[in-house]
Length: 439
Image 1 (cartoon, rainbow, N blue to C red):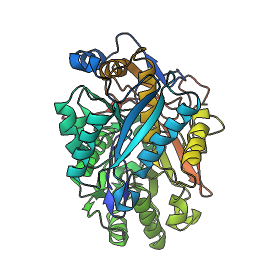
Image 2 (cartoon, rainbow, N blue to C red; image 1 turned 30 degrees about the horizontal axis):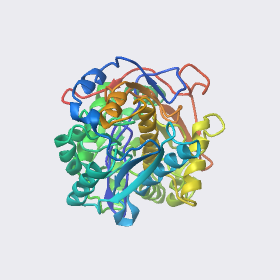
Image 3 (tube, rainbow, N blue to C red; image 1 turned 180 degrees about the horizontal axis):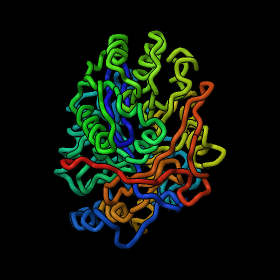
Image 4 (cartoon, rainbow, N blue to C red; image 1 turned 45 degrees about the vertical axis):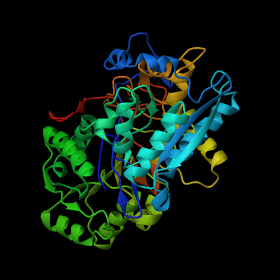
């Protein structure tokens, strides 16, 4: 349980990971990435920090192949297996088209075993043997980040949780880590439910990263005029929220944000709300957007009426008819990992591999780690062909675009969003992204 810019990054078997990810400036472009000769924000500075030795380093790449390493936590019940599945799915898709300029992608998988030492060793192996790190996801990424800081010529194209690692010039993310919240959804709810925003509740994991993420969201909410009545931190092992439900009811909570709870925790909360006959307005996010949420919560009667906002499309399939990238994503996930239950981490892996492939294609006829980093430093707009709202990997910035929806008859559906063929490709891009002063 915990929150963040993309409304978190999940948990399993009592272990929680929260991080967010958002999208950046609104764009009318439908391409997955746009490159420029002089990117804004961090692109030029990132390029200037590439060590000269990296431009002669061709580890892991030949004229017909390129080896990348995915370091994820696969232990603890396959905690972040989705990150590997998504990376492998995009690699398989690219390889089916002939590869990136004829180079087939091979994904070397490493399980860090949910340990810092494991993450560090797997990262070292990648530095030694692979062209780049791609698509990994781990709560222990700060340990690998130490090696990336010491080896600035080694690219890492992944969604990271550690803020120090996120700031490294050789780390590029399709969903950069930031510490605030989009103002747009908050203003929308405020306009629709002016009384409810004066009585807000949530629960937050007692993990340091989750508490920091909630602090960013809370700051944004308070700037817009929300009043937080109830926001305790709870152990990550907690799965029964009955005491919290009763406390919120007694406190007079009218609006409950579950942005901090991954699907398995959110469903437990929704079930307890229903059992206690307490029905505040529930706000969901991409953290708990899941095909299992409704059934795990006890059925539509426990979830119907909930609203949600997120910076991703309805990537589980609901948007497939209007956003081709959604159908492509799900097709190749099932093609490479039949029966796998797609989650947010699967999307992170797919997007990371797509961002890597875009940069590799622009890295010259004889790509080096240095030219890859240089190409990455020029990608200033990325949306995965609208599967997410656009962001700026080069500048490591997040933006203000999002979509709105509701759960009706047990199904996720969009509400109050522009058409997918509009100038913002189906995302609302009003107001701004609010970042706390210390972020």
